[in-house]
Amino acid sequence: MRPRRGPPRLGRRALLLSAAATLAQPRGAALATEGLRAIAARHGVAFGCAVRHRPIGDDPAYAGAVAREAALLVPEGAGKWWALRPSEDRFDFGPLDAITGFAARHGQAVRGHTLVWHAAMEAWTLRALEEGERRARGLLEAHIARVLAHTAPAIRDWDVANEAVANPWDTTELLKDSPWLRALGPGYLDLAFRLARAADATLTLTYNDYGCEHDTPHDDEKRRRVLVLVRGFRDRGVPVDAVGLQGHLHRDLPFSARKVTGFVRDLRALGLGVLVTELDVIEPEIHGETVGGVAPGPEAPDPADIAARDARAAARVHAFVSAVLEGGGRAVLTWGITDRYSWATDPAHAPRLSPLPARPLPLDAAFRPKPMWHALAAAFSGRPWP
Ligand code: G3I
Image (tube, rainbow, N blue to C red; front, side):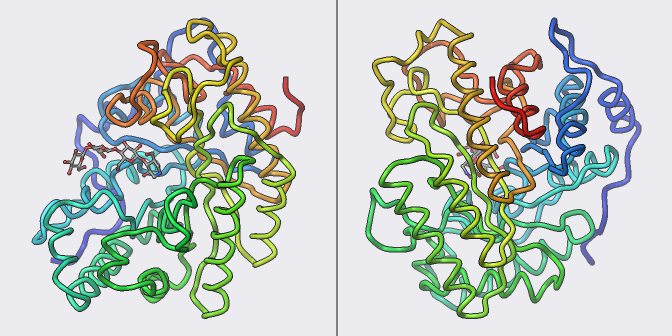
């Protein structure tokens, strides 16, 4: 059967939910009258967020917030291997189609995440990747061709590769250990980008990574390694169009606007677009040192002092986003829009020091704008903060 193109046809329930999402205005004392998408757009910036397919279908307040705030969506999980390839004999585009369908109804663009990553693969995929280079190459070719054919009308920018550069605290190697690296050798990234270009001549091909945001020796080295990787792509004629800086900000790590702006300029000097792809804030006194190895500093706020925590998170977000825009970045996505749905509030991902909720995103769990929301609006408008 030929892969279906375009958004799915809407059933009656989906139509009702869509109408509810459009109309839904979350309740709360400090509701935004205008979304970040409109504010950012007035200043030539595309603002967006990662989305989960289930709540856009069954939580009208969430769907309403996503519709109001975001011009650009990225699936938080629905574009990953384990979502698209639950078993070898089947592709499942249902969750991804739900997101592209929602975006089409709300005038939003969608970016894809992610075609090659060391994580988020089912056991069958991992077993297959151990069966030799030919088998791995066949899997990758089939995946990229099929996925890009299916999503071509709706998704014009994909994270072709995610988090491939090794963490300096793990190894001096350039590339991170990965089932793909073990199966195909260091050329697996070149192969993935070339396959993506062969499948779609005008798709934006993005390399996405973390660890380039702060002012630590690790971040200095990670920035250097990412530049080595993308210069290598350019020298070998490998097609790559953009670099995504994830922006999982550790609120209390040292930060240098000069270094972030300089890094963005270095990437742009190579002819690459630069965007922020996964912005949110990790709070050490809540998350503990298991997330990012950051322990709370002596002057970390009292976890119960929400105003102090929010103020510090907002200041860091403003500084980071302003530095990226200063360097020439023109798109910013947060990794979620509300603290209600975030990997950073999920204890399975972000073990806690504190039983208090984490506050990583622009809207709180009741969809009220936090200082971070206002800091983003200020950064997009070129206004100082606070
Ligand atoms: O556990 C099931 C798994 O068995 C099933 O096959 C799969 C199919 O969809 O779903 C799994 O459920 C959870 C999944 O999210 C749903 O998409 C996983 O348990 C859970 O670990 C997973 O977490 C996501 C994580 O990436 C791993 O994919 C987080 O929600 C998501 O926020 C996080 O996002 C990453 C970016 O992709 C890359 N950068 C870092 C960022 C934060 O860790």
